[in-house]
Length: 251
Image 1 (cartoon, rainbow, N blue to C red):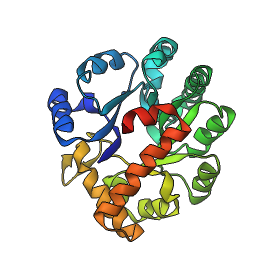
Image 2: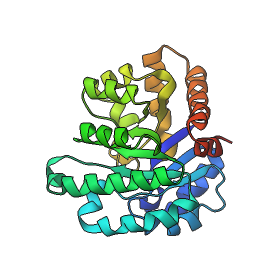
Image 3: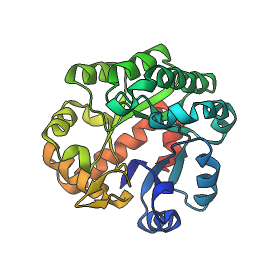
């Protein structure tokens, strides 16, 4: 099972989640919301060979924490993954849109300067701006659009730019989400949970809850459970041809 976007450090008991991920043999990308959270979480996963850590600066926090982008150059040497980063254009965060875009562009520039990274990207209400930034920094790495909610036209543009997509149970519950996933190239889709933010049945999703996303994808693609999981594993391995970081995660 693959969870390419969750926030292990934000669960009530992160250490227990790390142990459970190890016991179940999951592949997990644990993203962070600020650079200062990165070193703390790095220590927590040092004995977890299938968990990788993303260096993040969540767009919802940029208004208060934008100065932390200056920590990226040094910390990028410690990881092949960046996330959660991006731009949020929803009403509560529109006031910082310009600052968010400036910060995201700085992150992409730093990634480009260091040979690219796998990026887990937030684009709620700002898909066009995010794609403009990715187009401006084509050497920033492999862009994985997390829980993409743009228009079909924006999705087509993202596909043309070579973007990947991570989709989870919450996204696949809605007709609109399923419609978007149905338009995504099957070979560029991976699963996620976005736990503990995303919930199902009134409780936070955990990395092993990607089974719900796998079941929904199996139904959409017309595959059985094993074939669906095989496709997802192949996709994760294929991501390694786009950037070396994903190969590390899939070993």
